[in-house]
Image (cartoon, rainbow, N blue to C red; front, side, top):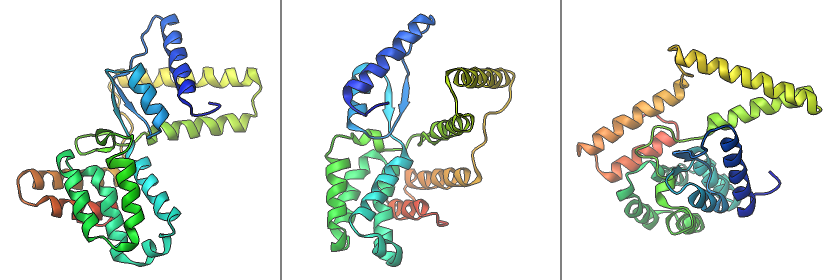
Amino acid sequence: MPNRRTATYSELFQRLKQEATVMGKQFDPRHIISDSEAALILVIRQEFPAATHTGCMFHFNQSIHRKIMGLGLGTDYAQDASIREQCKQLMALCLMPVSEVEYEFKRIRSIASPSLDDLFTYFYRQWIDGNVPLSMWNFYDLDHRTNNICEAYNRRFGTRVMKKHPNLWTFIQLIQSENARCEHLIIQLDAGASSSKQSTRTTMFQRRFETLKTRFSSNEISAKMLLDKLGLLIGGHKI
């Protein structure tokens, strides 16, 4: 894409709809996962009003981490366990029940280190009271929280293209080869083959997250304790 403007996204989706019509199909996705670009959010809302549009947890946390670095907090984050814990809890808000997010944000903001004031201000303006609705970056009830599998596919295909140094004809051959590969995978799945397995790390994360959700819903732990433990989970620690 030449840019990330609203008009460009709108034209992209219109062309995809037209191509689908030519093929006798309808391009009307029910669930869309993307990053939190304001222009993209607006166009998806206009073009696919019935679709459920959610963000990507990886990109959400990456945005916060970039802000931490951009505010010059990298050294404190790396060396101060208390600062790091508060930052991880901020990231972990995306895994809290929607009804608890704003209260827990205010609570941790009230006790956070003064050095994190700018980070909390950014978070409030961007995620709590900004253009990105809370429902889009909350992953408490979602099984699929990232679009990493799509980006991995793009990287893999891009690598194949670069290796071939394609002209138009070699590019067409690559597309045909990829189409044949996808059709083969569909046949395998229809025949009962299992889809790609999750990584051990992802499986362990999901298992621990579900355990915490169960403990919270049964009132075994409070919202404060849940956020504390989710912060550890985000940080990759055992809980």
